[in-house]
Image 1: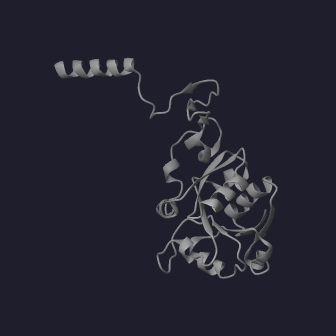
Image 2: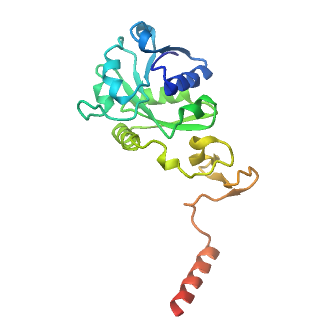
Image 3: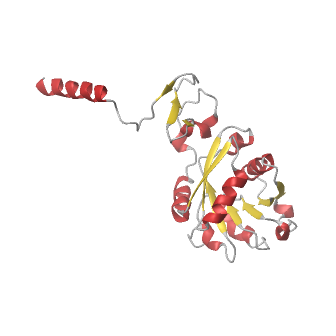
Length: 223
């Protein structure tokens, strides 16, 4: 796949590395080359710039290749979602708890691609997913954009205080479980020992544990 990544900052550069790892032909366009990028030859244009610059940068993107936005936020001029500024071509949004420096280092990362064009989303999922960068898809474009915009003013706060004993990075901490066939997930202990696993917190309790809790509640009521 021939891809133009517009935005040579930390996130754009890191994502270009993800694409190159999948052996895609990637051109990274910065301020000086945004007009010279090979948009007409591209199969995909990725935009990775601050939300305040999205509208201006989009005006420089010629051709008809689909747009994949990595930008979190709303259009400061209109307050609209950024995907609504894209006209006459398919658009998708990639979002997730991604830290550019950790993606660049090859630490485990996860993201979701949302688009009203599910065929495009599936194509992008297949093109981007790798052993260290896992992509899921879903059709709720509005929800993904608004959640990303709500999170963006205070980036990283939801990860504060989370231990990283397994050294998988702050991005890797939320979903270090190993997915198995059938949907079960094995969750490693917080001390990072790979040979010991515990059930996820939402797994139903056993009957014995429920009985123990009921007896404790009864004793408290009697006291």
